[in-house]
Amino acid sequence: MYGKIFESIYDGTLVEDWRALVTFQQMIVLCDADGIIDMTPSAISRRTGIPIEHIKAGIEILENEDPYSRTEGEGGRRIVRLEDHRPWGWYLVNHQKYKHLQDSDTVRAQNRERKRRQRAKEKESRSVTDGHAPSRHTDTDTDTDTNTSPSGRARKRAPADFTVTVEMYEWAEATLGLQASTVQFETEKFMDHEFKNAKKDWPATWRNWMRAAKDMPSVQSSRKTRFEELFPEESDAA
Image (tube, rainbow, N blue to C red; front, side, top):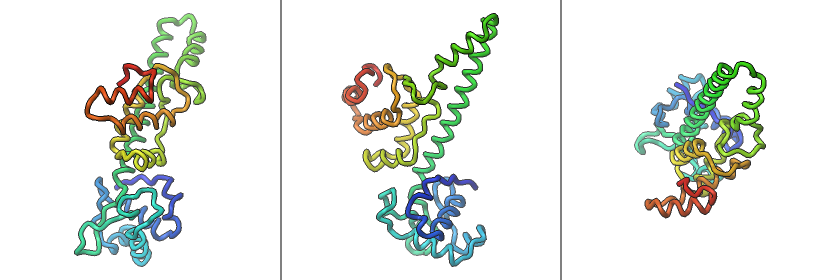
């Protein structure tokens, strides 16, 4: 069983009681692919070695509403019981959102590796074709490859290491009402898109992209009009 623990867990309200924090960490690791943990508190205690009284105290906190939680769903509760007639068995409220974040991390890592292999292959091809001037072509490759240029340099495609943070996902959900799956899908399109004009502020560009995705109606012509409002130079992008 594997579950990714995001750093943001240590910056929220869960850290106010270590029992809730530790219990939630164990649930993330023990739950299934759908965020279901169909176990009794005693079973969780046996599996993890954490005393049962700490697990029960943590569960009580996780089941309570939290008005300061990052996500408004379920009143800020971290876990919700699967069935009302039994006092055990839960699903993790935010599991799908963070699962999509984890999947996005994997996709970005795969994209970086793919682009690294592509650059290596292109460099090898140039060296074979123009073997008399290897140093000149090495310099040219460094200057023209937008994927490896300094982060402050304007470019037409988002850098391979561009990261959509938990806070950005939460902004898209809270402000635009976009589901995590939609944000992930639109981010993948965003990463593949080549803009006509070079950009420098990629988080701002990403937010504009998400705003366009939010207002996308079923009629393509209306979608294009909204896209052009945010990216007027991309007349044929949508």
